[in-house]
Amino acid sequence: MTEFEFIDFQGIYGGQTHDTWVRKVLATPYEQRVTDVTKQELIELARRVMECDGAEHDIDFWLHMLEINIPNERVSDLIFWPDEYFDEADYPEGLSPEQVIEIALNDREVVL
Image 1 (tube, rainbow, N blue to C red):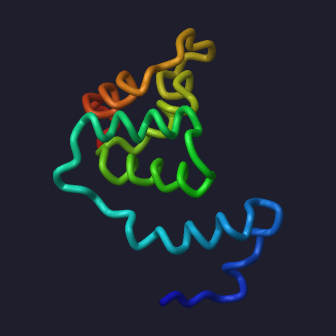
Image 2: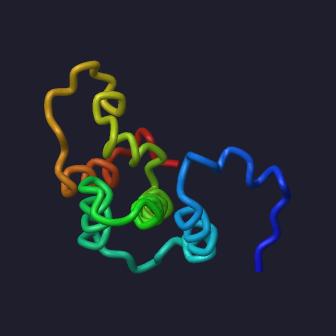
């Protein structure tokens, strides 16, 4: 149920394993907004992403689910680059999953 052009396969070699690429393709239809997602579920997704608690395709899926379900286009910056999110070159602290979700949900300046 997929259709790809030759160009779709360019740049894959070496960037990720074939297994990861196929799993990401197969997961894409399931990356949808969850209307009844809870704050605790979002925190668990953030924890798994932040701790790299799974295979590469799992982590990508969880990150996309966070991005889809939180109306903050920079949620990944909070996880990976909090210094850029807060515009502080030497942001002194790492954020907990709870802090990431709380900030992402309440920061109205970057809401889509």
